[in-house]
Image 1 (cartoon, protein in one colour):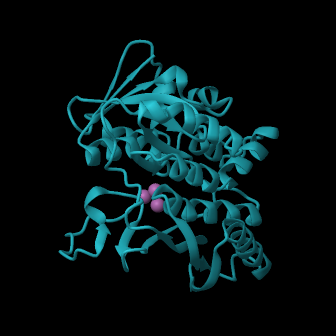
Image 2 (cartoon, rainbow, N blue to C red):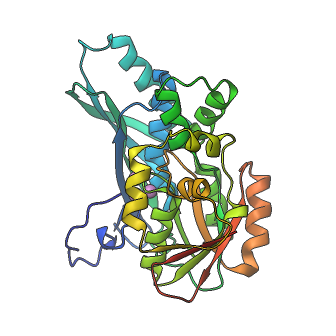
Amino acid sequence: MLEQLPRPSDPRLLVGSDTADDAGVYKLNEETALIQTVDFFTPIVDDPYAFGQISAANSLSDVYAMGGTPLTALNIVGFHPKNFPLEVLGEILKGGYDKAAEAGALIVGGHTVQDEEMKYGLAVTGLVHPEKVITNAGAKPGDLLVLTKPLGTGIITTALKAGKKMGELEKEVIRVMSVLNKAACETMVAVGVHACTDITGFGLLGHACEMAAASKAALKLRISAVPFFPKTQELIKNGFVPGGTHTNQLYLKDKVRFGQGVSQEQATLLFDAQTSGGLLIAVAPEKADELLERLQSNGVEWRAVIGEVVESQPGTITVNS
Ligand code: CO
Ligand code: CO
Ligand code: CO
């Protein structure tokens, strides 16, 4: 997420901070534009290698959300050797390195500061053709909305941090957060879509609201179509809800309307702060089948049509059962 700053009046700036998009895009010439983004956060899982992989996948995702290809990345590290042995940092960096390699990107350097609270992430530079940038601002009434990962990573990692034993679900949530949005991105670029954003800290509804506002449209979601990790509703009932999810709920309460048949737990999941979530894609209805088929043949595990873009009060979302 970019800070809201005044937009520089330079025609080479294709995407700035004014539309709350995933990354900045700067045109170099008629063929090439640079994508730049940065993300880093504190550990969300115990395994340092897995944390490195997840954080790198999350940082790379903002390039994929713009329809781009990651090129290079810089490590950003907060670490204090009195709190953890250096091997822990080595494992985190190896996780990030391996994930960047999988993305076809090179980690070319970085910076470490002494920090009581460990942090890791990447500043990523990517490339995109200036006419093929996919922003969050292009959604049109009638478009279908496709989501490519299940929700609930905030709920589950909060329960894990509280010491709850999760067995196979822990492995599964780590695996899903580590999955790159590369195949989903390449597929949507090949098919041609109207808008995209990735689902991270503001939750599905936060990022969907940004897409709706930037696109000057409204969104209608069907809760029964939204994929969730198993056990998440039960965990919410037991109080495992991260602070960021509550913040999202407060911040968005005037922009989202829930119809009958949407439970409180389901609503909470839509607000849940995600780490390394999937892409939310707005696609013209006549291209939706092709997108879904090609996502499947390219190995994208989740391809849920969760709603549509409608002509209503811009920047708002209605959720029905
Ligand atoms: Co981001
Ligand atoms: Co962002
Ligand atoms: Co993003």
